[in-house]
Length: 161
Image (cartoon, rainbow, N blue to C red; front, side, top):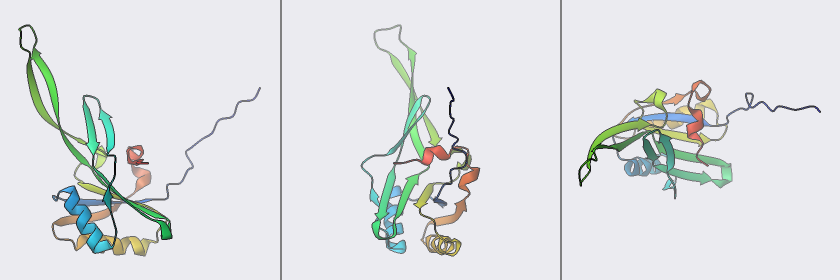
């Protein structure tokens, strides 16, 4: 009997990824993107959760589906500040715990990036450049640029549906 193998290497990703460097809180970033790009990003009912060994990270997610143009926008925070608890001594009646803060990243190869704006649509390059220029004009946004999705090692972390 013959067996068939399906290869997923040739699947094209039809989304664009914009990296945003800013020290703003995520709700403020979503508000300013809504105002400057005429979007309607809303906090999703779920966060992007990812298990990094001892830390269960939750990355805030905002989404907007533009049904008329079959386009979806996702704003996701790249950094998670969590605490790792270790039991130091449990030989006594009361156990002592040591809590140490730890920062994890959704996309570790871009650990300086604060936010990613994922746009699920096949946009023209000039439209992407226009979006970058509008995002760059937002106060407290340091810089923004496109990320080549095909070069990402951890692009599966960006599957949010």
